[in-house]
Length: 148
Image 1 (cartoon, helix red, strand yellow):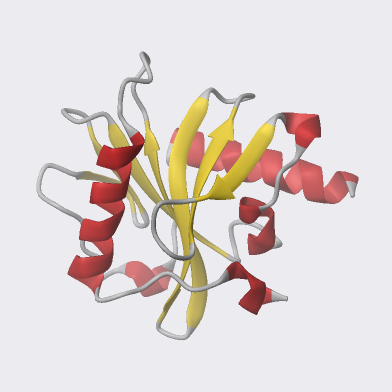
Image 2 (cartoon, helix red, strand yellow; image 1 turned 90 degrees about the vertical axis):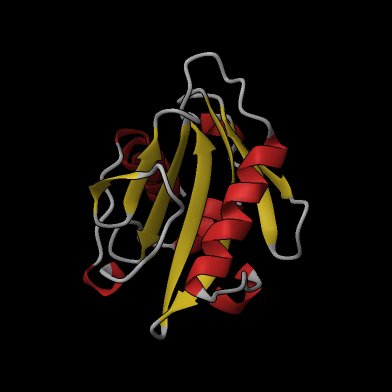
């Protein structure tokens, strides 16, 4: 269980500093105004929104992104859209939305989160961004229970 918690904490830290890479994502599209930090990690400074695509190479168990963990103050709840989730990471002062998707037959977690210092980006705006990403890449969220 401790390894799971450490893995989750490492995932959150990786996302917070914007380091996510996967060779399969070279054709991934994001909306206008986004800067690529690294393949799989994008930011829009004007809107204070970050997008991270997390692979099984980045975290041992993608299921951890969809589980509550009170030890590290990480909470997840069902989101606005089918198979999407709202998350709050109090340890890293992050809020956002996430989903599980399949890209080129591999599973990924897409996180769209508020990277502003003030935390003023609404969940509605984060969902709009997530829907745009899905539309641009012709992907749909899948149920995380399929990972079991």
